[in-house]
Image (cartoon, rainbow, N blue to C red; front, side, top):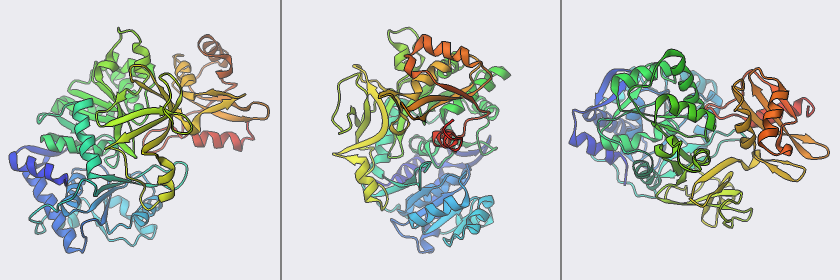
Length: 504
């Protein structure tokens, strides 16, 4: 089924219901939202775009983003969202690889595409050209799509090479949306979803269950992530859901505590993109209350692997609560999750291995890349590349990416375990642990530290809590950890820094 039908149903049942907002200002009802989306579809059709063609969105967070999104789907074309923070040359690569027929671009991003030599037809949105688009004669009926048809072509962040296009089908998105309401958080018409993170990724992919419910969609007037603005909008709208990376949650907590804000109006904060350190999520729950839900997924299985409920995140009394809090939760309803050995054979509970998943939210493969597909989909399982273990209760603890694991003297060290200990020191603001080449041991453990703290104190903290071989052999002060556009620490850059310094 074409998910544009969800917008059609909400617009038909409640055409006057408020739908799209820029800050506190309403810009469209559901009736207007759907009418403009059908106009976009009609305009694209007049430009020669056909069902199955790829149409890119290289836009910042604005309400028109969703109009374009559903216009593309209404025609039966494929959405190719591109992170607005990417360089023009990076976006140009995606447009070429996807074979995009058209791209909608924020006015201030168009020059970057032009400088990169992009020949794909471009339309600025918002702006006068887009005003013409949304007044075009609309298509009369939504183009039918099957469950296996391509809906969304998602490009991985490409921190270790060129990004790959993940093929996301309508079945995957439908299943993911229904799992969200079952395993993470129900959605009601009176709710508001607030897009404070890029709509090209996790924040935007959560639009669908809110469209289906007839909820409100709010883009901050700033166009990005500003904790103070989020608190203001939450207080104004009430019953607000946002998607946030762990670093965003940490920032929200610090700003709220410093400014005396309590997060009134925030109903649910879904955090993903990596597990949060226990110290950070405990501090967040202590301040905001039980509003947090954790999701674990990948582009290859969008938001659809495990979930840690708000009850588990807020629990401080049950036996083993701290271990569960360190996990990424249990398998979502539509998938099987296992931990396997190097051959993909499931291992016993508590045994370390690679996290594997199969089910209706798993991709059919990478766009025009059969070699990468074969290396990632093995015997029906998606090999996530994430290392961890599953306990007897089904809770999965993700320790690190397989490439981030440190092998020192034949023993495995999972950086997150060391990072969790170091963050117990109140003067450690951020930390990232990586391996450094060592002539005798193969690798040794090194910690990059944001904060002013004596190494001897950190040594003592580690020796009190973890095995001696896991203790960092060096603590390197750094003003800020390098991160990608989604807030993930770039350990590849830290390792490169060590190599450029001759391994010291």
